[in-house]
Length: 343
Length: 251
Image 1 (cartoon, chains in turn cyan, yellow):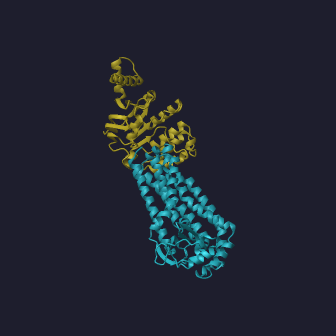
Image 2 (cartoon, chains in turn brown, purple):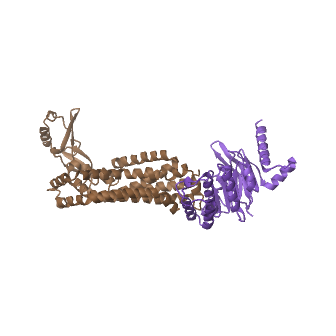
């Protein structure tokens, strides 16, 4: 059974190996320059309170245009790879045999259906995880100088920290968990729907929904976030609105904790309640500096809810474990279904 | 001797329609059994139940004394060639033999190799490029080289041209001769079965009409008609009776 599974997935293994080799060449050629640029930039020894901002800006300005493009391509590959694995490896795994009517041949060798399903799931699933893992390994290594500089670059790029939704999904271990889950989701869709194209569509829709909703609604609940209250720096105020003669002030988080994933930031008054401020015409007269100066005299505070950067690996392990366990549950369902439900 | 196929009140329903109903059979070992009936009579359903591809809606079925597809040992004892003789079109002839060897503990590599050689198949040829007759022969090779005690063939020759049909039956007969193997072979063409079968099951409108050794059935039929009737006459007579009964039942 192992041999047949390997033989049937030979083409996709070669395709994956070719894609990995191609990326390895591109990153291998450009990576050393990028690493050299980083090492000579002085970022590694900078102090968060002091010269970091300047060094980071300097480093980012020196980046080649291709490096910026490759950074985005790397993120793109790792965002898409698990979904593509689910759609092109997972969904057709069983439907292909149903549509070509080859399953009676496979199911009448001296191998039970449950074992047939388990071996296919296990081997191709491991292949999917290894592919995603190698992509992630290469991209994580290559982009680590840029990732570090983004984590240090201050509040304006705060969502591009390692714990932020974009980088967290595309670095280190998480792609392995996503690939396992997407693959198992694809197989499950195939087993239930039994036709390749609808199963592919269902897999794509299902995985995209999880991939989008997870960092928005679910990830922050894995480990309870930290709340902190700091004095509002008027320089961080970027928008004021007036609703029913009440001012609503929006401000960037004033924050010195490098690399944190900021979930929310709320402007409050000195007692810690949501600030009720009567609209001041100075803020709507075109002179924003005057408005900021006025806000500064209100002694407002800011409550920031965030996940500290130090939790990066806790989140990586937790999330990878969750998705691998989900994948195993789906795989178990597929085996049970194939055994129970006979065509 | 245990029956190769024993069913009691066996039935399979799809929605409202019974594809097979109230099927009670006991097929003795060491026969070549022809399963005949018009299209849609339930032949494929019966055979799929016998190999465990389907689960019965009612009744029971035992094959070689065991529940169909209940485990690797049971699977190893039954060889099956499904309708339209499926093979993996992307895999070569050689790949199919490797597949058989890897997935069957009782695999007879010499038998498989000899058959492929005898048939003149190129081992490196992709199965998708084979003719219908060659594909059927490859599927049969996979089924026989696992050395089953019972070989089940579902309309293996229905889509073949007359020459390929004859070659297929010939190579099947060669395999059977001198081996302790039972065969169940379905077809809607009685003339095909005449050459190889010594036991007959006539299935019509989801029900078994007649089952027994061909010689007994023919003798009884000849006594009844007094003529030199062939197997075809016998089957047609069975079907005619069944049709009459159905008509009577409707009236």
